[in-house]
Image (cartoon, rainbow, N blue to C red; front, top):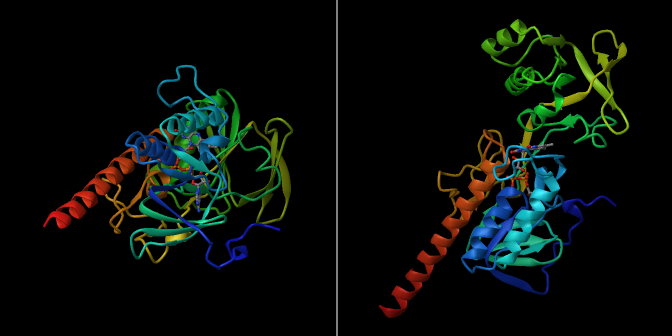
Length: 330
Ligand SMILES: Cc1cc2nc3c(=O)[nH]c(=O)nc-3n(C[C@H](O)[C@H](O)[C@H](O)COP(=O)(O)OP(=O)(O)OC[C@H]3O[C@@H](n4cnc5c(N)ncnc54)[C@H](O)[C@@H]3O)c2cc1C
């Protein structure tokens, strides 16, 4: 049986656990928030969601996170994040938030296993790249299939790569990849790009970039690494096999915010709207990392936002305590 939210019983769990800081998500943002909250003795609880460690856990190597001159494996990096947070008292639970009620404090968060009452909530549920959903894509992710040129471009020095997409990010990332790759073939389902004119001109003038228009990828082939893609021409239905070393997919990102619709302000793309201090519109609810960041989308920026959100949560709890103390002595 697939695990859908509709499979969850709506009956109330027998016991609710009250926590000062509840963190949704175990990616770089969530685990950094956990480290800061734990070092303030707040015993934060981190709900991992379905992907322990977040997107970086599917990354073969991270070479742009400071402190690791030789690079570090993605799973290894998040394991270190987790250990460091746990050392100061953070608790990591293999569980997923399925329902939230942010209408009053403490905030109620239902999960598959229990219910939490949280004085503060840090949302770091990240975003997921939109996938092509073709055969070979999942199996070869991290082995030639990538959703991040800044992260993985370096591994394709003097190689041939395919970029899928027709928007700004596809062309921008395609142009970026020409720093490394011998050739970049942009595969786009239409004969016109959504990307801006300047980017289109820059791409067309770049001698390393080729275009396969009116074309869609139907499958990605390879055993240990990507070897080829099957490309179908949407005009005549012909399918050809194009040899390649890598496939970079830039057809969009979906922030994981469905749970918060109607309770928090989301922008037109569905990202949580938070201010510079990670505050959402609900006092005590903070958002950090890719769930609130359609722009930078890196480990270091997400970790920074997580730390900032925890610092603000600590500050919020201190303020609440001083209000309680003042009213008790008044
Ligand atoms: C293939 C790939 C390679 C990359 N390489 C690099 C790189 O080399 N360098 C770099 O800087 N960046 C890289 N990135 C980007 C980087 O991984 C992300 O920017 C970063 O992971 C974002 O961190 P985050 O914590 O905001 O969110 P995520 O990493 O997206 O984590 C989100 C977390 O939320 C959890 N979650 C979701 N829904 C729920 C829920 N309902 N309840 C509880 N938890 C939930 C998920 O299980 C997950 O743990 C790469 C990304 C990919 C996909």
